[in-house]
Image (cartoon, rainbow, N blue to C red; front, side, top):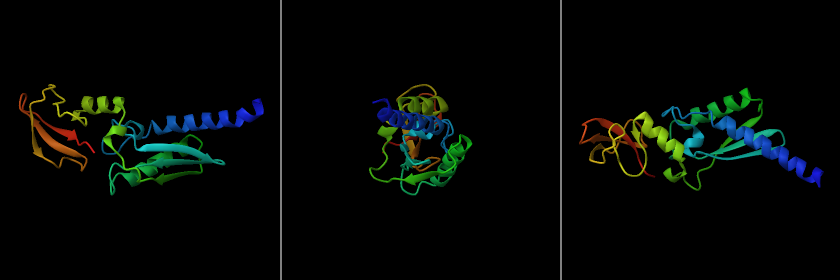
Length: 158
């Protein structure tokens, strides 16, 4: 019995280590978020000694994906996973529901209103107005707080 479960346990330990590495890879557009926080890191598996990481872009054509793939490969290589592959999976499509609660908190602490109710990240007011559906990146809109008058980005719900 021990010999049957040992390979599976070793596989789980390797997968857990890869997930730990992925938690260090930050989004190049919002550097306080990791790809795990964003929920774009979808799956980790091993094929022999090759690590395979599946990611889903926040939207098709996201310009950060090439950088994210390169950063994943670099991080994995730095941790001894020299023959790694990053594959892009577009179905099911990414949704803001995949963002972690910790990621949403990090967004707000960074000054970006997280998906959902639009609240000012500076003063917490929900009295806001949309200035533009297009913010500093395609996944954000530009808002202004009516209470404190500060502008801020809001991460759009997708």
